[in-house]
Image 1 (cartoon, rainbow, N blue to C red):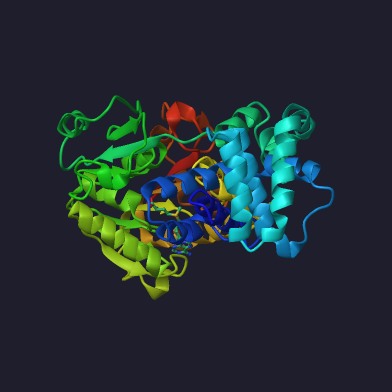
Image 2 (tube, rainbow, N blue to C red):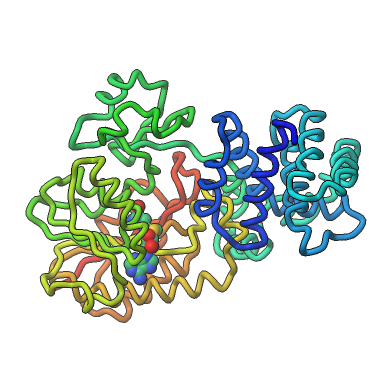
Length: 436
Ligand SMILES: C[S@@+](CC[C@H](N)C(=O)[O-])C[C@H]1O[C@@H](n2cnc3c(N)ncnc32)[C@H](O)[C@@H]1O
């Protein structure tokens, strides 16, 4: 196998793991990258995989036009390789002849040596008939916007003014946002220390910096020492909305991997913080993050929706509920979400979110506050969720002042950030107060 074929083999396998085995990129990509010796190959696989998954709905329709008959189920990796091949030609700066040759060669690497002729014919026909094929595919919404049909219809229904902009934003590369450690210095101080390249700040998140060029986390000056973390500016709003104060008891209810846990403690290092997550492996990441930042919290691996199993009965002054959700607001960062989510997931996750709200509310002291957020743009996981909660919870009220921010759209109740707004991820926030 040629040197160029190996990254295509690895990329085809990762793509197929998502499209046919329903595995997530965060689960499949890191071990696949570990099999490659050269940084250049790892970067290529990353670009091939992200690009192919981002445009999979369109690429699969293109492939459907290029094949006489669909491939058999057991040829799923060959299908994956052809998608990777089409993505290289249509969306990457790989010279056409090199892309075709390396992809043809990779067919043998995935155990389909006999399909070399087919791969060659498909990719060459695409090169010849590209415009006609692309126009035909763009006639359908799935092909034009490269999203599954159910998701396009859902967004059209929920966001009649914004759906097209949302779909376009979802297909862009997200910027890399940093959070400069408030306890360790200022944004300007870190930039001067790092000799950082030109970067933009966020009008809303005071520690956020947007890098024009993404860099490897390990290469960020001061990262290992906790001077800086990687976190989207929209996610950085959470800790500011909680506004933790010295001496308070605070709960981070769905904490892993700990981005917001670390931020809460950076803002208030003496905070008595309990961080719960039901996934012990992910909770270990919270510990790693806090160790890096030199901060600490009580970490509990448990189902936050069953407080009788982990709560010591002492009420919290503040709760952050960054609830599990469809992650429909962060598709640009996680393009596999397009393919892994089903419409039924919205109602299923909304059920979990309402259970978490109901079960955590009694652990909040009278006069306390709860910030509810999701990285979703579906109403059932945002305003509809909070509206129903307020209706069934007599001592819960919306903190109008706290929720009346300059960012986002008034979602009544709460605020909705759509993906791309001042470079941010899509997020929903509502600040709730407990009377008494
Ligand atoms: C959106 S992520 C949290 C991100 C985190 N707050 C951060 O900023 O890094 C949701 C988390 O909820 C956890 N989770 C899901 N269901 C849960 C439950 N019933 N109880 C506690 N944690 C749960 C998942 O394991 C996942 O880590």
